[in-house]
Amino acid sequence: MKSVQKGFTLIELMIVVAIIGILAAVAIPAYQDYIARSQVTEAVNLTAGLKAPAAEFFQNTNTVPTATDLGATRSGKYVANLTIQDLSGGATTGSFAIEAIMRATGVNGNIIDKIFIIETNDSGSTWTCVAASLTASPTLAGNAGLIDSSYLPSACK
Image (cartoon, rainbow, N blue to C red):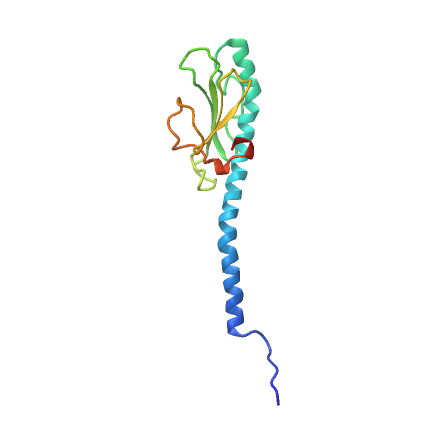
């Protein structure tokens, strides 16, 4: 007389658990990168909103504005602070950068306290992203605090 097997064997269950473990090992880091990129999007949007007003302010006054001059939102859910830096060393060449500093808490660990920067050298006609793995402006203080380009939108790479 044959006995009918009911349920799964221990080996079959162990194989299923191993497959789920492998899938999780691949999916979790990819998800963390996705979260970081989505949080950097806020910095991109906040700085993009200052491009035109900053360029207009410079055209009208021949001075680099501050975020307060523009009445800008100074922070967001993931961005701690927005600043505008004069890159011309006091000259009126129209070289300035808009910086978004990410928060120290509540953001992905890969972008904590990192800085997203867009800069212009022609009074705001063209803007470029600055990232840790891209060639940074010589006037910026190193690349240690810049967001890695893997977390930036494709337009910045």
